Image: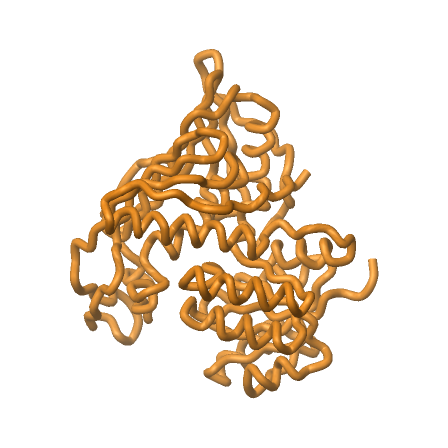
Length: 358
């Protein structure tokens, strides 16, 4: 199998725990170092990882290490581009949390730098490589619902400030329900139905301020700088239309996560924020749960990084790619532009649909 891809983590915030739970059991990767602006968080992460994981005093120090082949970028969205470009300049592969960047121009700069340096860039979410979305994709590809004609995708919550002790970044540029949670849903929809070619949308900001609901700062308020309720219609290149709602303003709902409807049946797809879940097919008057038929089993945060490592060894494209993440970012930003202008707008130059996980 060859030597594992040696990983250095930049950013040891809340999400790092999910990666630390998964990385030790993934083939082809090994954690070697971690750094954070808060040294105590980096030390805590290294201690949790165990073994010989080093604590680097800075990003520059981590990038200079000979035992780091790839950077796992877990910084806040506003820092994604800066860290990615620094890693690429140091000759490292990069796999980052979503979104890839906060603007198209930043995303393009990362892609251009990676091409020039001959390194790979991957981006979350990798949840869509799990058995849930991939089993649903196989059902679509096998024609189990006929020709796909429509889909729905709903993410509704009252807001992350209820549980996150420092939630402001969710409500600043680069945040909001669409850029925060949209990548899970849109990445799944591209796997299921192909790239998006046109969008129509509407958006609102019902509350100008939010109140922190937990932690030492509970009761503090902060301003909202982004749209917190976004709805839209997406046209996929195959002609299917998706109705989308992403909201931090809905108290409670019983809406499905994703459904795909075709000329011969319907498919209920599990939460794209999770790797697993039941896939249900409706044909001939009743629902049936499909057996798992595709996807990485026992997936967890970092599965996309292991997929990248395997693709490097086999000289094949990796599935959780920067190109897919760039398309998803473009869809989201174009949807917000369409909402602001009250028009339908094209999405130019979607990627090739990623290969399925079989």
